[in-house]
Image (cartoon, rainbow, N blue to C red; front, side):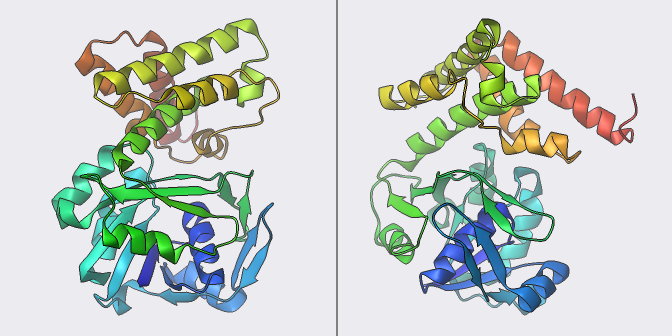
Length: 311
């Protein structure tokens, strides 16, 4: 199986590095500057599961041929349109796209571009960051990738894609019969965590260090879960218990990538995660005062950035 990964940022770089380490036929589609760096220095990962420093195969957009069986998409949700344009020439006739994006809105866009039969569902539970020198730093011990068919069931191509990850260090791929359930649970997790950490500008432990912060965090989780239930994807008891525990842990250093984007003065995926969840609450007539405040906070941040950061 020939695998193409768009970009070599935090998530794409980690997945591609581990695939390369495991011997999979992996190529990175990257812009000229990042490509030159990778050719010159190789890819560098730093992880609790073991570091990796290795050469990788790269390709430029003008060199793509339609012979990749699996294209892994790990871009920011707001870059989806340009990402679709970039990968289209590389997808084999019978190839599939595996999007690992935040939120759920990307599925409809990819289905429209490639056809639902060529688009898999997927989630990743992996916290990583790309440092200034290009090194990929694994932030904790999360290392799970889940994938499956949108329509459900276990197809041969899903099992083949999962097998490509077998043997990868620090990365466990799991083929699911109901990946959309998993994607909805991930959406609940992200909408809750991103809303609260960005609204409070703090990590989980810092927020829940007060009774008020702890109560608000649980309230946000329950609101997001209510949306999932009303949409036909009720979060499992195991999922809810896990995140009730995490979002009450005063020692938890967990902070979302969206908060890191704000602290770095970067664009966020607020519209694609918090905005989408807020839209769903309105459609379902679910009370969402706290979610509305989080969304307003993110929009205010974006407006301030558009004004050069000035008040």
